[in-house]
Image (tube, rainbow, N blue to C red):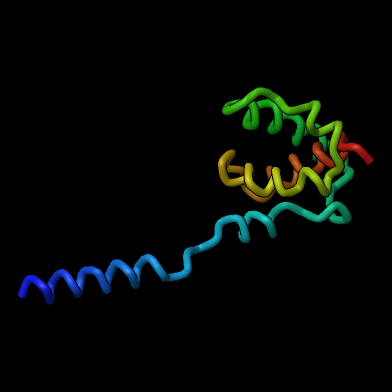
Length: 106
């Protein structure tokens, strides 16, 4: 009886371990706009700067130098990974993207 229970447990654990996991980065990637879709509105850029300086600096120092030294396309994967950690909604994502795009290397 023990062998049956242990065998069933092993099969169950293998099944759970092999199931596909939800990919949060795929959801976040679609939320961060492509360079061509980023707003150039001054209000969005200003709001993005406020969000960048308040939410992004909670965990680490402001990376202003990184923003100015890299292109938006280079920074987009970083934005994608940080969106969920910073708990940004779609509007905030658009605003931070506008700020980063406006200040990134062209």
